[in-house]
Image (tube, rainbow, N blue to C red):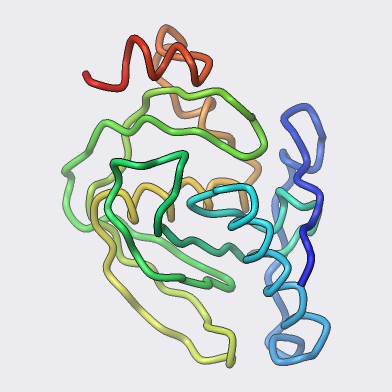
Length: 177
């Protein structure tokens, strides 16, 4: 496994719409290795998730995991989840305030609203479809990563840019609000 290069905001690849992953390649050695590298990249970068377009691969896949993450020390843990060709639908109308960061927009945070509960339907690493319900921070991360597959950055979802802040200022002025 090795770390992949994370592209940054301004790279046109972050604004493209990803293509569905062909079911015939999911169990291929090269795709499985890509998934391992994507997971390694997320962990090395202390991300809560990462989507394929963030490493310049325009396929509909993301991974997410939260365990002992220094970028989000106060967030609840959740296990590794690999979502290939994911679809998300909200469960209910309840929204939560979400302070988000992004590996493609380093050292920046912004406040926006996300659904608190979602249903995620996707394909796993063996090619089988699964459905799961996510709540809280896990739901936020999944929505954030799915946006990457459609060329949307979290700053596009912010109602106001007044809370767009560098991470250091977030910690000093906003983190306890």
